[in-house]
Every structure is written in C-alpha cells, then in structure tokens.
Length: 174
Image (cartoon, rainbow, N blue to C red; front, side, top):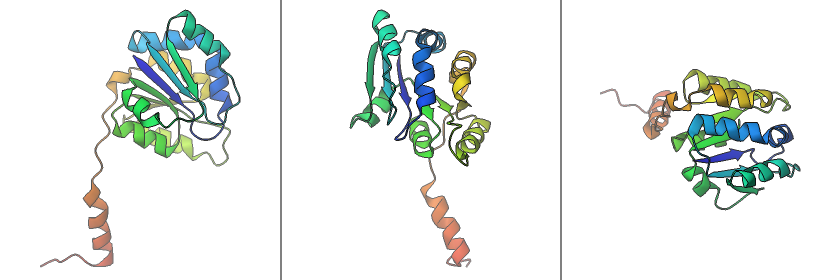
C-alpha cells in the first residue's frame, strides 16, 4: 500500500507537525485501514517542519519514505497511491477524485474565510471523501471505511455548453 500526504503549495504547518508528532499512531492507523504500508510520500509545500520523527518511524518499520516540497513526479505518485490525505484545495480534491483514489481531506482552519470546510462538507455529503480537521486525522483515519466511498463521476463536458447555449438563446427548439 502506498499513501500520499499532500499539503499543496502553501504552508500547512499544523498538519505536518501533527503527523510528525504522532508518527507511530499515524502509521498504525494507515495499517489498520489499508494493510501493510510499503511507501509513504509526503509533499510538504512551504512547510518548515523536517518530519524527522516520521522519517525515523518509517525507517524502523521498513516503510519507504520520501518527503519533498514539490516534484515533477507528483501526478505519477498520485496515480500510484492507494490512499491520499490532502489539504482541502479544490484542485487537489478533484484531481484525486478523478483518479478514483480514496481521499481523506484535512481542512486548514487557519485560513481566512475558510471555504475549504464548505467544499469538504459538500463532497463528503455526496459520499466521495471523508474530511476532518488536523486534530481529528488519526481518529478519522482509524474509524472510516475508505472502501465505502462512492466513485466520483466523470465530468460531462457537454453539460456546460448545453446550459450556456440555452441561457444565450442559441438552442434551436424546432
């Protein structure tokens, strides 16, 4: 099993710090949910946390660990992941769901006018993902059945054009 944690392009110190501070519990929760953890990728963005504890625990458990600010291989890593734990950015959410990957979204509550909660709640209500705040990550990971998530539907490229034609009066009703 491969897990990807991604915080996006900004700082999400709280998530990075929390997972590093609870490295053993984090890996235990991953194993409980998905079985043997073989690889853990951690995209930390602009975060300054070094992830030393997580690196150490992964080494002890023989889990391949790779941490990076950004990588040109991101889409390849995302596609190969069995589980994604992500910040609540719209791009990260939709990209992950289009690949039909189980997704646990962690909202960054320090952001002003936090639209992330609204997006995460709406997508969770539809059954496409689970979401939590930083302090609830381990509990949510341990208590959620990620296999019960619904697959995200493919986008209907024609729907927008049809709606636009209708609104602009270009629809031929004959």
